Image (cartoon, rainbow, N blue to C red; front, side, top):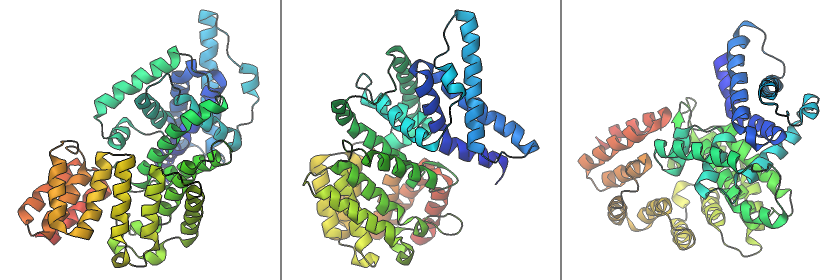
Length: 409
């Protein structure tokens, strides 16, 4: 792995952990300084590692350099403004164990989900800091404009600092109140890893693994071991079980219909089914439970033709009652077309198009193109496919969509 790729890997996997750890030790008022220190450490790694031996423990190296940079800056501020360096003596000798970092990540997530912040601020702040996602990736995940997300992120950080939000686990009743948002953020992190919005790779497995690990940490706590948390980890287990079948050797996507199901990880599927059973025991229905049930239906089908699309359609109908959204409606159209045919599917697609919600969403036009092609409307199918390609930021997804031209023509 080239040095630039290695540093990029550590930015993706360690950035959020490092920022969380430094901020938890030095206080929320130093959030921006923690970000700057970690970024400077990564830049220094890129500058020095090509000309020297890469450290045996690259993660520890980045954490130490970031910590020292932050301490140096705090000392300079202390001399200039007579400020006290918070917890300096303790931090100088601390052992940065993986366990403490995981705890810091959870504390930071609950802190970022503070009720004084709007839900939009909570999501954007956490995805940017902990997930290390770019503004473009977050905007794609939330289906918002990049400029809107960038402004919201700046405002969120200012309010985070102004309100002096403490990086402590809140009381039990507050944990319960914030847990739903924490789970939503874990879900969005996983989704970005499952299908990356930009870059060269379709799947970012390390991001998915981080999301699963965070959920597992929550499940170890009695107060956080809820049906929703169990349903979410079931959903992630089901999705992860198909990783090895989702792409070819070059990393190009393979559709669900064409996947080699013998490559699906049966152990992960069983873990998913066990977690789904735990989630179902209390009879509480939530959006993750429904999505996990849909994914379980796919996992149980021995072939694509065996898929119980009527059950999937019924589950999407239920999800629309519980958590109605344009994305759920779009997903439902796929099942609707399988059950009732492409003509009805296209009618639903055209109805959704009038809402203008999907104007910048490539997958909408990819689905529209496929359904139009099945009806023999190839000119319109090609037009929709062109729009899908133009809106796609991920290079592997672009290549996959371009291949569809040959099937239509």
